[in-house]
Image (cartoon, rainbow, N blue to C red):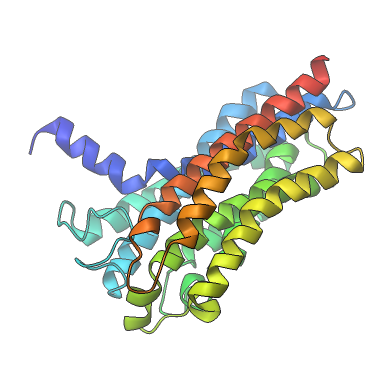
Length: 303
């Protein structure tokens, strides 16, 4: 196999479309710190925080791929995961080792942050590692007992935003918890779209996800709640003065949200074609919303 093709396969195994889930929270924390004149950012730590976050994300994606394949969640007639195992492009042990290596490098980078900022970073990092590793580590993994949504919300919402802010500034600002909520809703929506698409296939291997509990109709309502809830939360944060009115520019992404919602509404148990790539489309919404929020926070500092 050509080196370039092999590289592309490994990149595919990391599921780069989902990296918005780990990059945007770091950018939000950084912009919020930049807008806060009472704190000082250690800019040398920014690339460490960002790369470590993405590496932990890669580790979670690849370990999840391995166990989903091992337990039959991902098979030839399913849509889940990166597809590199189902299509036999990589061996299962290669993907597992790749994921564990990403976790290891991310953890080692995190030790730099621990050295500079203290044990608090270690505790938050271990929390993220727990969510990533135990997401699918066994048949009782968080994903398989309907706790995946909660784990993803915590890991890619409050935990990553608060942890990034602390790593960069050495201080806590509990307002970072509040500003993490809209983006936390959207990152859960990515997973929710994925799991709703896979309701039938997941039921065959006897695992439990939140959409399986809610059913298709309930899952549609859940998806609408998550994506539109992000906008409602933004309005609330503006109304209490935590965010500048400029933050309302996130509504520029509403057309994407409406398009996704319309396609989601068309899904049926015997026809899931409208939401086959809804996880990717929701990740795109997450990225657009997140970047607009970052821009708004930066503009509030400048204007």
